[in-house]
Image (cartoon, rainbow, N blue to C red; front, side, top):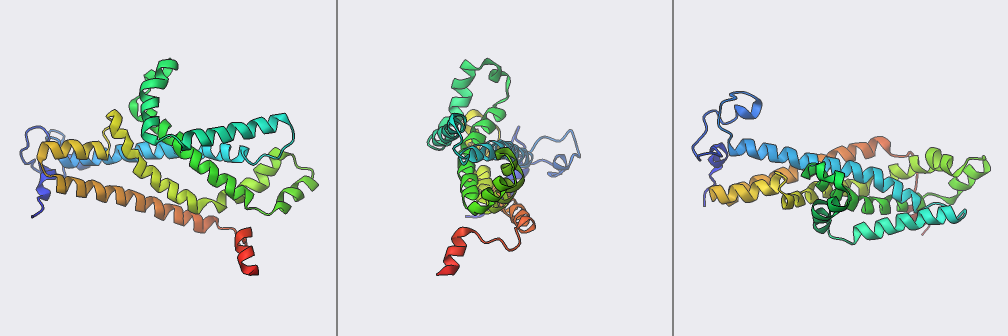
Length: 263
């Protein structure tokens, strides 16, 4: 079976080959019929937008919830915050992400009416962000707990409050430690963005399904979509690897590695 890559230069309107296939892609030839290549690139943009927005939400919420789970027991207030963060993690990581998308799209706007004004890609991004935040929260918690206990004790001896201890000592180190697992979660955000097709966000998976039905060229369509998913994940991996190298703590050995060296 031979590949027909020319399918991407066919018009989405009548199936005829579009002259100057790449013209509209680069902003030229505004009167040209949109091709499947144009549609593919726009779908890629939607995929990156949903993944990027969802990951931003996940990083912010996950960092907060992960930090709250490690608060010292100083009274009823701190215990309540720890329970809240624990409930958040257990709730969102134990519900399938596709179910969460449907809840945010069909159910929650019925109770929170202003959400009906949000476009579908925002609702998907919120669902994806909260789902991923539960996983990031666990990684942040593990990063904080991996720090030597002397760090917190030294901060207390210096008279720092709990908030100051986390802001100036614990979080700057813990967030740098958890960059490797955050790389995996960032790549997962790209892959999990495919659930957006379920509420008709025109991302890569929805493009692949519709374009395959219209052109009957599923091999070419799905190969292209697979390549773009892989390229996106690889790009995220490279960026996070660069961030990890630049933010590495010189001379720091985690307690687990230190125990391994002792043996």
